[in-house]
Amino acid sequence: VLLWVLLGGLLMWRWREPVRALVQRLTLPWPLTFVLFCTALALLEEAVTVTMTNLAPLFGVPLGAAYITASSNYLDVVLWHSVVVFVPMFVGWAIVLTYWQVSANAVFLVFGFTGFLLESVYGGSLNLLQLGFWIFVYGLMVYLPAYCLPVREKAKPPKAWQYAVMVLGPVLLAIPVALAISAVHPTPIHFPPIAD
Image: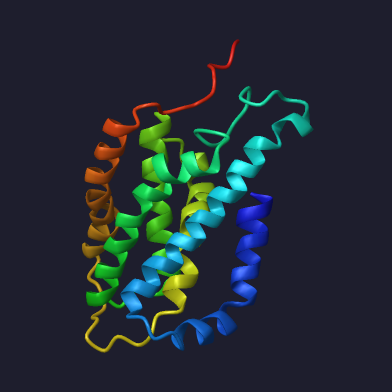
């Protein structure tokens, strides 16, 4: 929370205008820039979580007794558990943003809600007390890239029901990747169970 949500979120908010000016000067097509930017932020977020997992011994807890990632190995986490599954969702958002004019704040909230639902499925508990936390964790992966989008004249304002498509559509794109990953790399957690 301190590193990604507070520090990362404040830095993104503080530097959003210079970052937007820089991103809009890039010559790549904006959907590709959006997906790459989201992916870079997801990689950064996972760097924070893997680092915190590996720092558990500094807080008096043996490595693996408490963890917030599936592994203490960064490449294992991003290639077999998290970011590899996020990329199709970022592609889904690039498609959504091609057709619908959605504010960066709305993208933040909607993708954050998607993240909350995914974490609820993974964790086995739909704990509404965690809603704000997961909105920030996931929402910050897409907020700044959405803020940096150029004007898209063909994009229309979405209707209320289309927000449901924005929550679930990107997940549908991620399901084939998640299934393939779970078939190739079926180990969900690389730590021993925590003893009571």
